[in-house]
Each structure stands twice: as C-alpha cells, then as structure tokens.
Image 1 (cartoon, rainbow, N blue to C red):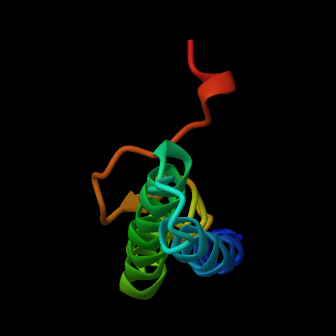
Image 2 (tube, rainbow, N blue to C red):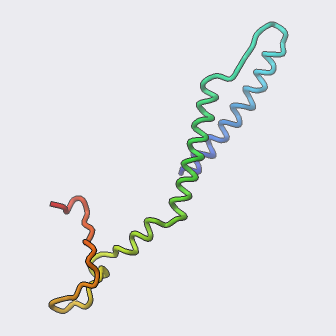
Length: 106
C-alpha cells in the first residue's frame, strides 16, 4: 500500500511540475509583465513524495530483515517453549517467560 501511495504521489508530482512549468513559461514569456512561480502546493507535493519514498524504504527494510519472523521463531507457545514430553513433572529447558496477550494479563 505504501508503494502504491508513493507511485500515485510521484505521478501527481510529475504532472504538477510538467503542466505548471508549461503554464509558467507561457506567462513569464508573454511580454505583459506578469510573472508566475511555484507555490506552496507544489512544494507540499514534493515533500509528501519524499516522505512516502522514505516510508517505502523503511517498509522494505522491515520486510526484508525478518525481525518479526525471528521473534516468532523464538516464541512458539507452550508446546514448543522448551517443555519436554507430557508426563508429570515436565522438565523445562528454557526459562524464558511465556508471552501473554494484553487481554489476559492481570
């Protein structure tokens, strides 16, 4: 979704600069003394596009590094959390606390 938002913003930025550039040149070169320049909206679209580019890079970095997969692999729940067997007096090989959901905490 971030990549799609970036591409839409990039298309808007290119159209904004291209169309307004043609209009600006026509106004500035007509000889009537009028002038046109880029306004706040154009620079706001540029800032939004740069922000979305940074968001795309951070999202790709987070997806490619696999930090969530590594965390999930270390915490698989009760059955795979270091307990051996199902007999009485089970032996725990790992002393990491079991993760609980926020709604089951007291």
